[in-house]
Length: 112
Length: 120
Image (tube, rainbow over all chains, first blue to last red; front, side, top):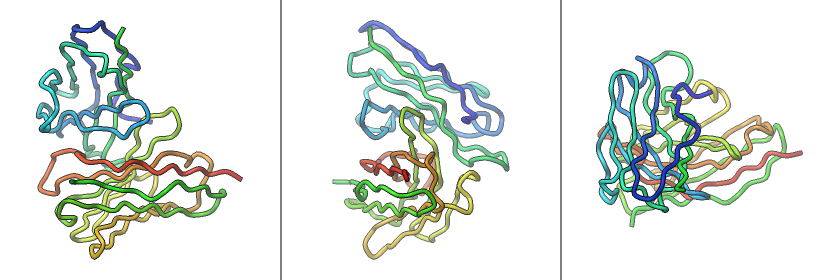
């Protein structure tokens, strides 16, 4: 059972802006960096955002990350059909039980 | 080019063990942690643990403590994940993924995944 909670789904039409939330706690998001991964159907995940809001080279600037307190968000602006995928947030967790690294529950983005 | 190539699909019986390999190329193997992440059919991502290929040090998720062993062979730039006492709910795709050991750059390169099926 994941300790990072995401909405199960989000959708938008091409060109729209879509935002995905990720809710955690003081032991994970509240005290550590947040990462975002995109998983296209049938493929391995891909790193989209690291250190809360940094994009690896090659990731379009349509993708942006932010963090406030114990929550984080991923925004996709200018939504495109190829953005239809599952998105996961992740963070290290400092609590002594469970997993030192946790993924969110995942959000499926649909382009209408 | 930088890549991680994993071993092929496995079918195992309950109670058996499986060992998945992940061969790295195109970068300095000892400069990056290797994480292992699994995904059950239709489910989300689950972190299993990581190994520091330089020191051999490991961190495991509590859920897998006692059942998982992560090792590496630096001479052939390969990391291994062995999971024992397999159960049907261990059926999943297992991924390796690297992360720069200088800190907090995320898992930027992933293997193609290895499907492990546990069935009697």
